[in-house]
Length: 284
Image (spheres, rainbow, N blue to C red):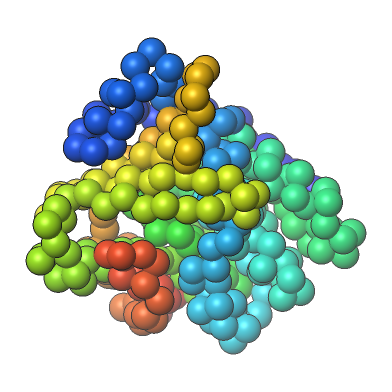
């Protein structure tokens, strides 16, 4: 394992908490410590929640088996997809903006077999503006992480991906199919907020709220420990994520010089998530 570093600060603004999530946080009063899901505290919660999450892994690995060459993973996080890709025997460059997330991934690699970690290069960098001076047979952006970028950021992403794809290479990215999401929740009593309960890989429990009004351009995620401690501070992790339809991303990709993406259906990720994996390449 080698490391390349581009020191880019991660910044996030805490979302305004409303609904049942807002009530749960307000009830804690001064005990609350709001955390970004990608900071040094939030990244450990993120990793814990992702420990048992195999969503899109099988489908992604299936597509990678049809491709050759090294893999560039963008927004690698704590390695939910990185480790399975390395287990395929592939050489993986994992790029991540959050230093905290990257530190967790580095620890995981240090505990992995030498043959696996030696095939991984870690890069701290911005997926909307990177230059690695090499090309890849596949560029992967999973976990619907494209939704973390605004329109200008996505323009930069597409430009950088094109510059790093080898001839015949493929760009694989996942996103939420908002049209199916609306249909799934249209008859719900409260379609704007869903509360989910998780027991993570560590055995710790969490309560996650997801807030999204059909048609809104962003959704808010709030994570609290469950059960709540009887005393002392409580870390509440939050993040705000864009909602980008496959149709919108298809339009943007084609305008940026990519072929019309092929859509691969992904299993449901939750009570109202219908995700798709888009596969595209540089247009001739």
